[in-house]
Length: 154
Image 1 (tube, rainbow, N blue to C red):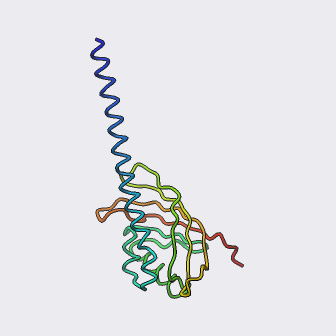
Image 2: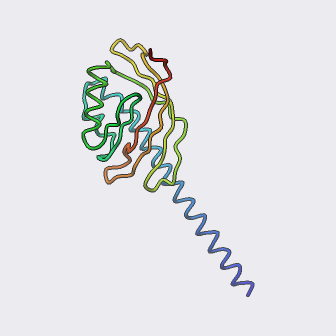
Image 3: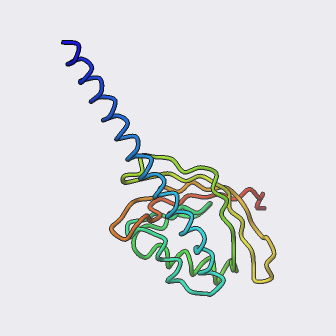
């Protein structure tokens, strides 16, 4: 009887430990993919190449910029890129990831700060962001992208 209890306890321990390890592995994979994606995100603006930017997003994404209607779906990244590049003058930027959390299976959440630079490499805006990432057949992609400025717009 005691052997059976120990066996059951051991099975529970290893199943919990195994699932935690798998979650950690999935989360670490997501963190690495997000860091790589963030490293090349602003290259799209520096190079004027929307294809780099579009590749960061899931086909069913939402981009929720401040004081604007949400851009949704397959065309959202191109619409956002055109506005940011041609109307706002975005040419470079930086993400500062504070945390990535979640189960690492289908979705993870990233929180952090961002900075935007113009053609003269002058900081013109900065703020915070919250991104829900989705694991797709093409890898981790931005699924819901929401951000706001820390600057008082008048």
